[in-house]
Every structure is written in structure tokens, then in C-alpha cells.
Image (tube, rainbow, N blue to C red; front, side, top):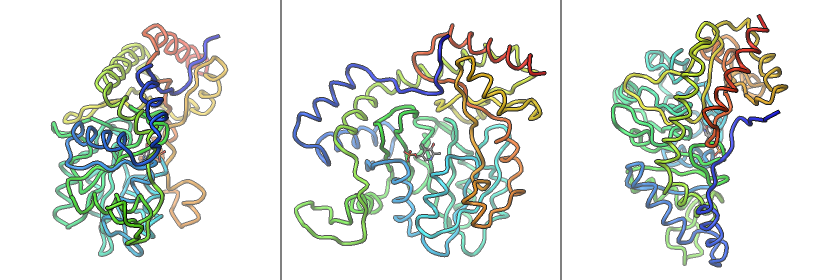
Length: 372
Ligand SMILES: *Cc1c(COP(=O)(O)O)cnc(C)c1O
């Protein structure tokens, strides 16, 4: 029986060569690879600056600090996300205020934002989920009207666009992540992008123990962190970035195969839809069961027995035990909660063939029709 994992990175011999070169160079942190990776990343995404960090979560933490967000502040965000986006808000002592999502794109619903703005609201953190940007025109208008900072969690949506403009170029800053399941990987790693020189300089200091920008000085200007990226990761990042058009083209092709293969199941599952003004770079391929009674968790177990490894994607953050202990209510954000119960991520990685996709679709069909 063939096993299909949910995700796996695409690593080439060029990637291996780059990493080995970094390893042999004698400089293993904050060296030439980081600088090259940052410069190229900024150019590719279309921002003035890019600052490499040790993870996407670290990048979000720094973006919030750099925006001056702290104790007593509120940040509007989405509960339908990886937990890191809300956690970063808690790190700075601020309160995540969860706004429900659009039932089609699973991104934050801009129509529901204004009702949640208070005197304490300082920022909006939209998360561009699953590879497609949130509705950034509406979000930027609201932010402007209420003088709020926008920090984009673009960790899942490298090079996607909204109205022809790239994710990560709308807000004061944006963060990308390079964990092994993302469009490109550095193992662990992230990138904070901005057009604001002051924010870039501040984040460079914060990632390096608060040290002044001139590394000669053993001087510490502020409370900082060790959020540095190492040179081997940056070398892998640079190599992956050189290949990013191919990586995204392949993901789009794969998504197209799935959508075709799943068409005969349209009475049972909903396939992902990309919003009219958006393009999608396909972090994952997530389907939704039309009827929650079909039993998503049991389906995941049955698929696993047949070698198809899927995941519930995503749980709503405000329902996690820890968040419930902070006082978040079960009945908040009902669209997100209902979506969380019905959605699962299918195996999605470069290397899956059209035949594999047909095979996975067949296993899904057999499993679901037997379940009814
Ligand atoms: C991957 C991801 C992050 C960052 O994750 P790290 O593992 O810290 O790199 C943040 N937000 C979202 C939505 C993500 O998918």
C-alpha cells in the first residue's frame, strides 16, 4: 500500500549544495547568505526591506513590538489560523480580538471588523489563509478610517496577490514563514518585510539581543531576543527562492488536478475557491464536507488506514483549552467553528503525480460512499 503524507518539502541537489557551502564557509550565523537571502526576498515580494528571523512566530512577535503594541492593547485577528498568529499577540501582552471568517475563502470577514473596534484597538492582523490573501482593500480602508496599524500574517501565502498586489505589501509590516510544509522552506525560519526603514532597523536589533545595528559594539540598546536565522537555513532559503516560480507553478498544477478529480464528489465535498480579486499559491488543499454529520474525524481515521494521511484544518483558536481559560467563549465566531468541524487538508506536496491524485480521490470516494 502506498502512503501519502499530508506534506513534505521539495529539496533539490542545488539546495544541498547551497547548504553544504554555507556549512563549509566557517560563518554559520548572520553572514553573507542571510544578506543575500534578505535582499532577494525583498525584491521578489516587492518590499524595501526584509529581515530574516528564526521562525514565522518570531517574526510576528517582532512585528508587534515594532508597531508599539503592548499591554492593554487589542489586536483584531481571525480565529481560523495556525495558533502562532494569536499567540504572538499574547506575547506582547495585548489581547487578540477574534472576528469571524468568510465562509468561502476562510479569511477574516471585513464586514464584521468594525463592530469589534474599541478605544483599545491598535491593530488588525489579517492572516492570509491556505495560500490566498484576505480582502485587503476593505481591510486597509477600515484601518485607515480608524487609524489602525495593519500587520499581515502572510506565512501561508507567499507570492499570492490581491487586486494584482502581493500579499505582504499592504500593511506596515508582514511576516512569511519557512517551516517544511510552506511553499518554500528553510527548515525553521521566517522573514519580516516592510517598507519602513525604522521598523526594519528595530527588528534587526530585536532579533539580535537588542544589539545596536553596528555589530562591532557590544552594546545593547533595548531588550532583545535571539531570533537570528542561521546561515545554513539562509542558504537553503536562497536556493529555494531561486526556484520559487517552479515551486508555485507545481502547486497550482497539483491543485488543478485535485479540483478536477474531486468534481464527481461535489455532492459530498466543497473544494477550495479563490476569491475574484485574488490569486492563490496553495499552501494546502483543504476540502470541506458538505454535511458535518458525515463525520470528519472518522473519515480521517479511515483514510489513514488506507495510506492517505490528512489533517483537520484548522481548529478555531478560541476553542483551544488555553484560550478558553482566558475567557474566550465557545459560541463566538460560529462560521469559523462550523468550518473547523468540516474541513480537512489532503496530501499536498510536489512529487504527487496526477495518478496519485486520482488514486487519493478514489480512496476518498470509496471511504465516503461506504460511510453513508
Ligand atoms: C506557519 C505559520 C506561522 C509561523 O509558523 P512558524 O512555525 O513559527 O514558522 C504563523 N502563522 C501562520 C498562519 C502559519 O501558517
